[in-house]
Length: 224
Image 1 (cartoon, rainbow, N blue to C red):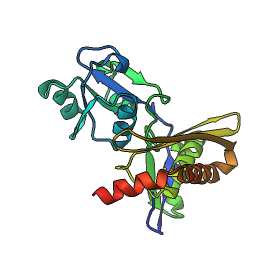
Image 2 (cartoon, helix red, strand yellow):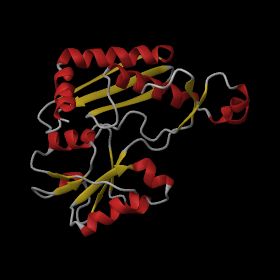
Image 3 (cartoon, rainbow, N blue to C red):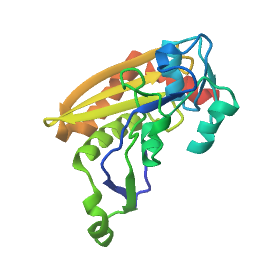
């Protein structure tokens, strides 16, 4: 979440579907997975949330591009894999999706589905070319999520999730920190005016830290 001093995220384009996609071989939904089902994902965020709901699940590390991950579903005889819906939609592979996971079930990663463009600060020439791509609503949502992540000093490989929605000038931010084994989930939701999105992210992060999220994150960082 930290950029070099001379760079900035100048454009955040309109967000694609932020949800996670559940892709299964034999069942029609996550709730139908059999006992001790094998689920492929290398995301600690997804792992924490899935195990919190189903402690019997066997999480199988899953790496590679989208095609490789989909192929492993069959080759490694997994019961299901979980991927970002945005990537599948951009590659026009929605037909493989069994179920789109509601954020209430699996909260997305910070800025999931959003594309940003990083440029030199104050580069008016570049902005004249790409400025039209910026989507104010998406920017407001993503900035709140990123402020939440930055306060928690998190990166992409930590069990942190956040999803902001903007409606009628109010941003609502849903944030989560979970133990990797699913034993503990700290989750809260807060709202604020659109002009206070970044402060909202910080405030929500501090609330989760007060609940004990820091201990979970320390365990993750120290385990590596």
